[in-house]
Image (cartoon, rainbow, N blue to C red):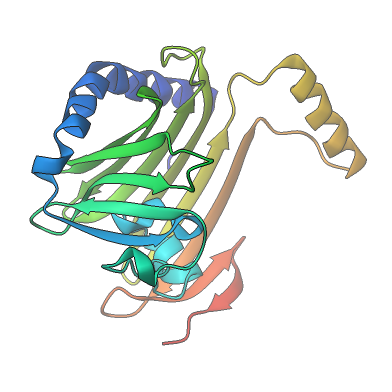
Length: 243
């Protein structure tokens, strides 16, 4: 599987930063037209919200969560327990194209996400007070997920390489029949000096060396239908997936 280093991550940040700066106004216009574009709504508890609802990861939503994508959204708000409610606006194909959290009146909602679907990818842009703060991109090959990227920026500034707060990349590799690998990488490129020193001290306290790039590699066995049956970390079995 491809090696991930700072040069690779910075190139990916630059690439998706160009996309968000090029497309955010187009996505914001979509938001203003959502009442005409959204054909139906479903609702779910905000704590259960994750990108798997429209970017199903074979790992997070098959192996780790036992083939579930979390609580299934429901057609009525009254069916949801909890203070915050996640609203999914669906298109004619029942795909989420608008996602927003509704909170009590004393905590008015500000964040929302607009999603567009392309032939080989899905791109979502997140806004805070109508300013772009994040981009999510899932890429496909032959209808199979090859990568999921999430990149967040400081909401007070225009998205840029210097303004990126965090990037998370998931890479998937079907390296042989009935088996695939999942690499998860997290990088915070613009930590303040104070935070970096604190992290160094915390790692030293635990007898570890601080790594600016966090990386994990898992492996999975699947059955003939492609469903995950076993999960490995460092080539050690960590979970049997019950059918």
